[in-house]
Image (cartoon, rainbow, N blue to C red; front, side, top):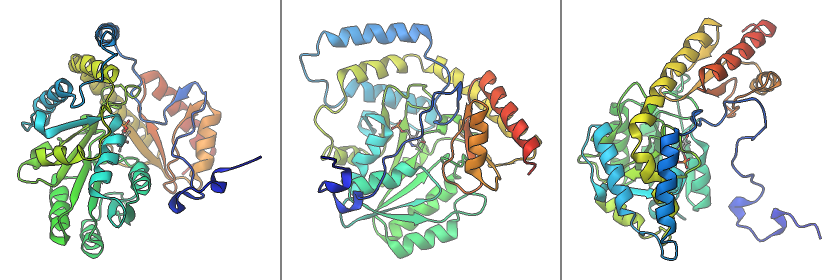
Amino acid sequence: MNIRIDDLPVRDELRGKSPYGAPQLDVPVRLNTNENPYPLPEPLVERIAERVREAARHLNRYPDRDAVELRTRLAEYLTRTGGHRVGLANVWAANGSNEVIQQLLQTFGGPGRTAIGFEPSYSMHALIARGTGTGWISGPRNDDFTIDLAAAEKAIAENQPDVVFITTPNNPTGTAVPPETVVALYDAAQAAKPSVVIADEAYIEFSHGHSLLPLLEGRPHLVISRTMSKAFGAAGLRLGYLAAHPAVVDAVQLVRLPYHLSAITQATALAALEHTDTLLGYVEQLKTERDRLVTELRALGYEVTPSDANFVQFGRFDDAHEAWQKILDRGVLVRDNGVPGRLRVTAGTPEENDAFLDAVRELKKEQPV
Ligand SMILES: *Cc1c(COP(=O)(O)O)cnc(C)c1O
């Protein structure tokens, strides 16, 4: 019998939907998912093996449910780099920041509640909202993809959302949100009704500006979400974390699965945190390459959105999907996020970026913009 998803008694809001995911194609140059192009350095690989071997000796037991050592080290990293002192009680970790966001929506969203995001932005926010039964409101942006503050404040006042998402630097457009805008949106959200504001800082290490961490002071409804998938070059590890008032950390305990973070994950993340200086060295190289992509794309006549991340949004194309295909035909995979007329390219190694720039140079000859 040929049974498909929609023949099953799935929830109404999941009917006819497709799962999230960029096409994973086997091409020479893959610049489509904002991963770090550099493999982990060998001394770190050795350290992971050591820590995992030690953890393996205790796999008959459940892991530390509260991940105390890991959260302590994450808090130290945040304090050292974020311009604001946080401790164990302010930090929570899960399997990728996607799980952090899911736990936050399970805690502060859910059936009968709503979340707002300013689109185009990270599409997983809306998808996790759907998965947790949280209503989704699509907020506005300006033509240059910055947040239209007046329109955003109005949307918050009108809709009274329970959760507000601010992605900074924003994905897929690349630009960071000024702290004043975040404060204004936080105030607007609190005026409408006490709601949680989630600042998704997945790319903050690549930014020209600073983390929003100091804004946590006196703002108990602000949550800053982070990940080791991008700057730390550890997308395969699946480790995300948040910083917030300790009460927020207590609240997510109500929904987290017991022992959600495996002993192997904790051991691997701890090893990576011992090597932050090396890993952040790669971030500097990637920022230089990102700036080169911006400069060279502009020199070719493309319109480029200012980037604080490890990727660059560029255009305009009459038909972005056709341009995506033509770049792919030249062996380079970039991302079509569905933003009209634009594509997104991840900063890779210098060689990968050269291959990309060659491809768009040829494209430009074919279709002058
Ligand atoms: C990549 C990305 C994440 C990372 O998700 P993980 O689950 O930590 O890998 C989170 N937020 C945004 C905006 C991203 O682009």
